[in-house]
Every structure is written in C-alpha cells, then in structure tokens.
Length: 422
Image (cartoon, rainbow, N blue to C red):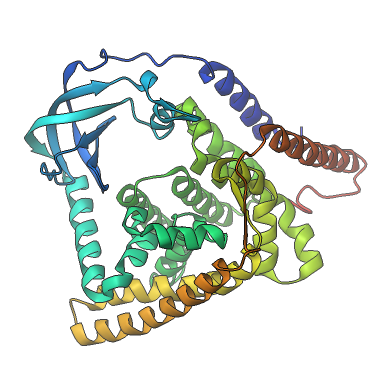
C-alpha cells in the first residue's frame, strides 16, 4: 500500500463525522446551573461586549469587563453554565465550534478566587504582555497589525482592516500559520548556527512549543510545528520524508484527541492548503516557474471551495495581492522581533527599526487597500451552494485517487520512484 497513514486518516475522518454529526453533547452541568470550575488562565481575548478567558477546559465570559484575570493564575470560577446544545444561531452551530477548539463548555462568570500560580503559563503571560505593550509603544497605530502577525491577536484589527485582507485573499497573513512559524524557525536556526545537532533541534522544538502555547495552539500552528520537527528529524535520520503521510499522521493525532476538530475551519483550511501545496505545487511550478505564484495557486486549489462556502465570497486578485505582501512578511517579522529585542538595549535604535518597519507596512496597506477597491477584486456570494462544493471535491479527489492508482501501478512495474511528485 502506497500511503497507509492516509487511508487511516480518511477512515478516522469518516468515523469522526458519523460519531459527531447528530450527537448531542453530554454536558456535565444543566443549563443556567451555577457551577464552580477550577483551572489555569491560559489566555484572554478582549471583545467589544465582554472579555473571554480560556480557563482549563472552559471558555469563561466576563460581561462586566472588570475581572481582569492574569494569564498563568490558577483560579476557581463561580458562574452560570451555558449548554453547548443551545447555541445554534441560524446556520452557525457555536456550541459545536467551541467543542472543535477543544473546550467543554461556556461559563458566564460571577466571581472568582485565585488559588495558585502556573509557572509556565505565568511566564508565557508575562512575555506576551511585554511583547504586546512594547509593540504598542514602538508601532502606535500599526501595533494592531504587528500583534496580529506575531501574537495572533486578530481581534485588535478594525473591521475595515479585516475587510481589506479578506477582499485581497491575504487573510492567512493575519492568522498565524506555517508561513509565520516557518519564518520564526528560520530565524532561530540562523541564530543557533543551523540545526546540525540533536540538542539544537530539541531547543528549537521547545521554543516553538512555547510559542504555540503563547499564541493559542490553533490547529494551523500545531500542524506547522509538527511538520517542522518531522522535517528536521528526517534530515538527522537520513530518511526521505513523504509530506502526505506526515500530514496524515498529524491529522490522526488531532482527531483522536478531539473528534469535533473536523468542524474547525482553521483545521480544515490548514490541512487542505498543506495537502494542496504538497500535491499540486510540482505540477503548477512546471508551468509558471515562479515559486510564489505556484505556491499561491496550489494552496488555493483545495481551499477555494471552503472559502466560497464559509465566507460567502471568492477573492480574484489573490495572486497579485500575495505577490505584494508575502515577500515582505519575512522582513516585517524579523524587524519586529529585532525591534523588541533591542528595545531594552538601545531605545533609539529600536525606534529607528520600528520606523523603517512601519514604512514598509504603510506601503503594503496602501497597495492592498487600492486592490481591494477594484470591483472585480472580490466576488460576494449571498447564498453559496453546498452541492457545488461537493461536486468540486468529488471531481478533484477522483483525479487525485486516479493519479495515485496510476503511480502505484507504475511502481509495481518499476517505472517510477516513490517520491517523484509528492
């Protein structure tokens, strides 16, 4: 069998879908029951109407916006429990979404008690606050964008800014994914003089895991970090790495850990984009011969139906937009990290770096805003059809399966090697 892990992954996907499709969630508590839960404050998200805390296995909403729990504190929360089965709004099942990101329920906080500290999350929280506040000091109005691409804080961006990235097909820039973690891995590897020893790989892995915890451990981040670790391990072990098998193995771990993750749009887009690049990049690049263009096209082949159906629109100028912003992402991220490191050493040098960085960001914003104003830049779709998505994937996956079977037959006749295209 050419890729047994892929077969296992597809089987698990099917089982998970059947298991969770119409299953009511087994709540530990009753609707509106006053409950007490204990856990570590892992993150805080400031929203317009309330602050949301990630505490243990629960999301905790503070509508008073005055609790101000610090990341890293172990707290005992008293509040009203909201059943996930009663959170369906029109076509959106918010309860299932909460399950898909790994949480058991939602609590409206009334009062709390701090009972201990979690040293690891306290350290992460302090670093996160320092980075966020320093960026705000150095970058002023552009700090929201910097905090978004470094810390994953998209909620600080205005609706107008989010609209620009959506219409130009560059929303992946403000959602931390493989591009961001790859750039950070490259920077760390450069500082350590290359990942040419096992202890360096361990250090890199630990730093990236800490970074993942700091920015929320979304499926796209965890997937990219695991991918990076497997890539380096294959070099050390002198083994060829099959990208689709690696991706399948990571997906298997995700689904075993949380079957509801299959409904998470971040999980869907991250895995489909990676699979699409692995499978189609070689073919596309033979035509265009420009790596960035080939990457953009290949990544969209399997993700465009999801964008069409979930976000009710299709960006048409995504290639042009990505040609503008992606080449500068490395420069922006590296200058941002440099400015925050030098901030404690020499304030004026840090301000000079930040000033140059802001200039680059201003140019990118200007160009993307101009592109977004074109009438043909984005097609809005009021009522996307699910059957169109299904037909698209049936045709495309049928071609991919046919091609796989063809390659397997050629391998049997010793006409083609295992790693020729994928």
